[in-house]
Length: 102
Image (tube, rainbow, N blue to C red; front, top):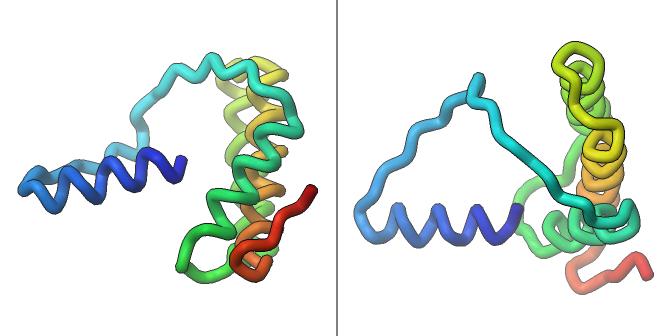
């Protein structure tokens, strides 16, 4: 999330280093609504300065979530929230800064 990126940037500025562990497993028990997750993805992406997410990137995002859902037993609610967040991120990355989807 955007908050995590801000925290990580602060830690790096303070001299800490980080390691990326692609195979790491996380526990996610969020129970936010689909609307909230869409809006969060949208606002996180539209606030950023990075490049817009490609359509391919969106499908890779959704494919990754679906793979975890099918193969690793991701709960259906988390899977749907992940998809909503991904769609919000895709649309938000294409929005002008300050746009709101609601």
